[in-house]
Image (cartoon, rainbow, N blue to C red; front, side, top):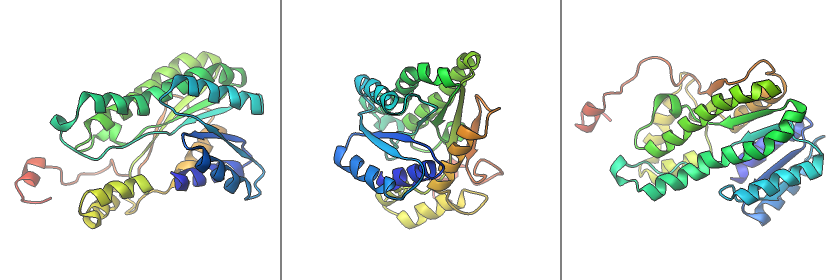
Length: 256
């Protein structure tokens, strides 16, 4: 969304990075490019039209980046979708494969075409996964599957690319407040309790922010030079300590 991309781009260009970002909507992308560049940061951003479900679009985006800047130092894969929650039997194979193509195949293809350029400069790849790849999530088998695949792919890629001194890491956000999170809450039919439960899942008692995700990526790109194959949770401690998890009792109405 515009809000997420604006924040992430601002974090990068404010630190002097030149960033190429992509989406399918040309008008919105160009408007966002102009808005970010108008902030007067030392870095700049450039928008490229790209449908990340299409291999030829991805190849063209990588080529355009090299044409503009002569190199690629860091690839951040953060495109993805989170469908609404539903039981396993309600998912179709088409839905599963479509989600896999968006959430996993796009990461594979961008890395495939960017890697020759990253090897030249000992660059890095940062893949956006999710905490649910480690802990699971109710009503989200396809989504959790895609995030687990991203985490596993990251480790395998880190092994292969170490000989080229290319670092490959994963960030795994938990409940970070985004328009997508808000939309899922609204569609749940009871947004108040839904949002409250999401906030209370963290030991820190709040949602994470988009800025915090951006600064973690910035650290991995510029400072975390001895990290590869790592999966870093941006979770506020959501995976720690015990909590009420007895789904049988919950479904019987003892508690929700």
